[in-house]
Structures are given as C-alpha cells and as structure tokens.
Length: 388
Ligand SMILES: Cc1cc2nc3c(=O)[nH]c(=O)nc-3n(C[C@H](O)[C@H](O)[C@H](O)COP(=O)(O)O)c2cc1C
Image (cartoon, rainbow, N blue to C red; front, side, top):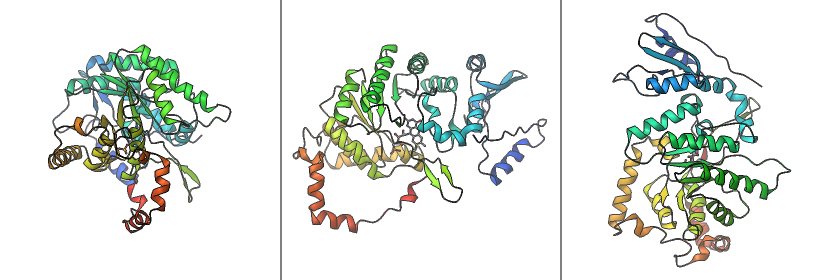
C-alpha cells in the first residue's frame, strides 16, 4: 500500500511559516494542509475550518480524551491540537480510496469520512463531527439532520445515539457499500439494510431517514421493507462513487463526478411510483440543479428536494436563487403552496400512470418526434460536469 508523506513545518512565531506553506501549496496542489483545532477566540477575518477549527474548551477536552489528537499543547491560555483522523486519513488516502469502496466490514463511523472531492479540507473524525452537530444546532434555528454511515451494527447504533445526544433532530442513515461479494445473495444484502434500520431505529428516539442507492431487484418492495423496519423517510438516491482509470499513470483514479440535471430522472421515477404507497417522507437527491428540477420532483411526490452538486458548483447563495425561482414559478402558475403541487404528477394521480414504467419508454423511442427532439438538443460535454 502506498502511503503519503507528512511534513511538519516548525518555527518560532513570526518566522514566516504561513507564507512558506502558502507558497508550497501554490506550487504543489497535491499537498494537503492540516487545519488545527483551537480553543482561542476566532478573529473577525478568520473562518471556522479554514484557519482553525474553533471549539470550546469542553469540546477540546472531549476530543483530547477520545484520542482524537495526534499532538496537542497549551499555549498561554489556549489549547491547540492536530486532528489525528485527518492526518492518518491523508497518509493512507490514495491507496485506500478504492479499497474502501470495494470492501465491506471495515470499521467506520460518522459518514463524513465517506467521500469528498478534496478530502483534506473536509474529513473529520467522529468526535469532531459530533462537535459540528452541536455547533450547527447553536448556530441555526432550523432542524439539524445528522448523516451517518457505519459499517458494523455496533458502530451504527453507537454513533446514532451519540448524534442524538449531540442535539441532532433526525438522522439520515447513508447505507453505502458496494455489494461485490459473490457468495452473498441479493436477499442477504437486503437483509443487511433492514438489520441496520431496525438497530438504529431501536437505539434513538429521533426520526431516521434512510439514504440508499437504486440497485435493488425490486425497489418498490425494498422501500416498503425499509419503512416497515422503521425508516421514517427515504432519501432517493445515493450516487455511488465510480472509479476511473488513468491511462497515463495506469492507476485507478478516485474521483467524484458532480451530477447533471439528467440524473434526476431516477429519483423522479421512483418517487413518482412510491408516492402514496409507503408511510414515509420521500426526499429526492441526485440531479436537482434548478427550481424547475425541484418542482418536477415535488409534483412526482417528494417532500424534500436536496441540492449538493449545484451548491458545490455555484456556492451556497445559489439556494436563495432557486427558492426565488420556485416562488416566481408558483406565482405564475397560481399555486399557493408546495403542498398543493405535491404528488400531483405521481403515478397514483397523473393521467397516464404507465408513464412511470418501462413500456412507456419503448413507446417513446418509437415516437419519431421524440427522437428528433433528442437529436437536435444541444450536447452537454460530460467532462464539463466533473470537479476537475
Ligand atoms: C463531493 C461530494 C461529497 C458527498 N458526500 C456525501 C456524504 O458524505 N454522505 C452522503 O450521504 N452523500 C454524499 N454525497 C452525495 C450527495 O449528498 C448527493 O446525494 C449526491 O451528490 C446527489 O445529489 P446532487 O445531484 O445534488 O449532487 C456527496 C456528493 C458529493 C458530490
């Protein structure tokens, strides 16, 4: 296994460490900077997570007691620490990325460890993630939904309880593993999902949502099974990491591609089919890039639509634009509430329920006008959608 290298830049205060690090990072983009935790007060020009992770003294003590620091020290009245999880993750990151996604059964915890485009900036250990929940809870008035990805049943329930204790209003269980074991049957794989949902549900009082991929032989029965096991919400669908091959280096290249608006067809199909048929809230994720995308999913039956790639691409303020566009569209079309449009185009309520099933696709392909429209549509260069 290939390991990364750790460089420690040490010098007295004022010697120019920051300038040196800046210059090094500019010349070598693969370098990752470990952002320390500190209990010192944040200065107005500083940003949490950029200069430091700013934590309270009790939070720092909890992290230290949990062995979360590689080293920590008191300087005058403040504490400073280097997150162990971050550094260790970086050192083994390259070699492990593929292993992680192709193997199961390894211990993992808060799902913030799963996958990110610049892992160096985001990866944190479970204790830091719990601090993050506490901070988020204090910072905003809206409900905080914690996201959890475990590997062992014990891990799932332990961290679910810890998230509830940290103040989370709900938990999204991101059940993310690649079932590549040839002797495990589809039924056994599905049973693993159910066991996780039952165990997490039994360990917390707050609602739990389950985020899954679409790869089940019968998504409808799987959805019902998950809800019967205790899921209060279904988040459809996770996008699975798919490795690429670098033909120059002959290496597997881990990368995360951002979604395109076309990706919303899959959640649209299944939310449309499941609306009114399962006793759970339905959240749509994958391919929501505009207010129109959100409207389509609401009409299919989503309670919630989620944006990730669009926000990574356009920044968080883009959310306001989407909301304004949504309000404007509703005004123009005389909808008074989101509830009014919810499910109006679901399979149960739309004029042509067969539109959600494959037969319709066959019909559509035979329709020359449809093909004509597709051929004349502008082509989106797929590589433009990637983060790199
Ligand atoms: C860079 C990146 C990091 C992500 N990290 C997570 C994660 O930690 N947990 C999770 O459940 N989903 C994660 N996702 C998946 C998103 O939450 C979302 O379900 C997916 O990207 C589809 O939505 P989108 O089309 O709006 O991007 C990540 C996606 C991206 C692009």
